[in-house]
Image (cartoon, rainbow, N blue to C red; front, top):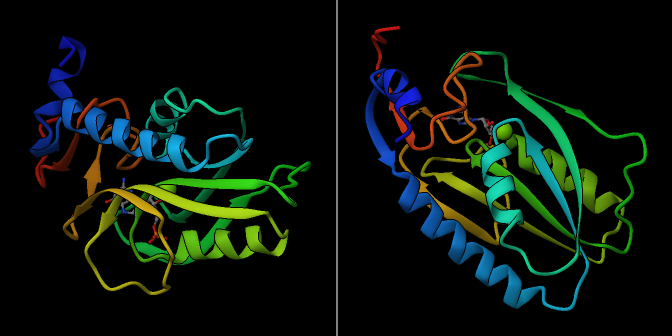
Length: 185
Ligand code: 5GP
Ligand code: MG
């Protein structure tokens, strides 16, 4: 770990996924997409901010031409429980009609976010839609989402790091971990 983040790592109860484990899995996810989407131009729709590191790491491993839209979506209001309402910032020029779309997000939890976004994407009639997440939580979904790939299945615990935050913090951790309920800082 870079020494600059060791202080923040003390705020973790435990590390769930190391940078090496994440990297190895992202390699495999990219290899699969490179095989399945070879010869296509892919329009990536990436959810921010939590997906920032996953998207950056996956995209630089993709070999086909790629277009990128980033969306900000939130069903969280800064805490650890979902509000149920999904807010999305759609870019003014957003147009995916007849395109091969790859939707990327950090975590599939209740399914509210991705199902709301998939519905809006499908309404624009893309040629195809694939949905990949880095983490899929093992829990009951409020809305079903058809996933094409998930990096890791994890328990129903609140995670931070590798782009994912708690109240705006911890995104810069290179690993993914469970927060210490009594953080030192
Ligand atoms: P869903 O709509 O599926 O309940 O939630 C999806 C979004 O909630 C994810 O894209 C992610 O931004 C956020 N989220 C869900 N679980 C966690 C978690 O354990 N940690 C963090 N930091 N964000 C989460
Ligand atoms: Mg998110």
